[in-house]
Amino acid sequence: FIRLTGCPLRCTWCDTAHAFSGGKRMALEEILAEVDRYEIKRICVTGGEPLAQPQVHSLLGALVEAEYRVSLETSGALDVSKVHPKVCKVIDLKPPASGEEAANRYENIGYLMPEDQIKFVIQDEADYAWSVSKVREFNLMDRCEVLFSPVAGAISPVWLAEKILSDRLNVRFQLQLHKILWGDKQGV
Image 1 (tube, one colour):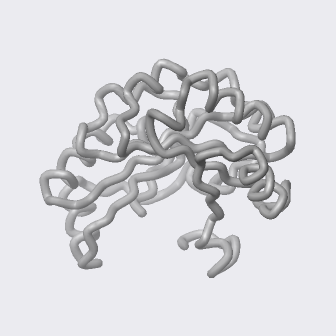
Image 2 (tube, one colour):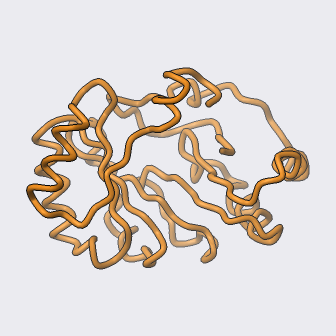
């Protein structure tokens, strides 16, 4: 992960509030050198909200140029039209319980490519119904990969998985594996 500081949203269930401020300023060259140290080829640029950072497009371009496989996790509240075409966009649509439904920028759906993903973080049954309605309204299962993820501690992952199966949705069920492995702590 390359986690960037700052986010204009305040989702009720946010688990990265530590990324609202702080962090360490780094030059692009420093970031690339740090990434290179790990000897990996997959990079996820996340936040906070990475698109709120003025230099994010330079970072994404430099990572692609260095031949990393890059994904960008974004809230979906900011314009994705200028994201490098080789970057996998992971756009989060905010259901009602997030408190940020009004921030959804639905025109971003038009920029989705088959290799991109759209994610719904679901807190309750109303969020699930809303998410299913958006999947159908925008024909998302035919556009790209769709992810359904339960808000940790708010809704049963088993309930969500069973609803997906019973409704025969062609979506990917997603848990935050890092929390399962290492717990809810910063830095993992």
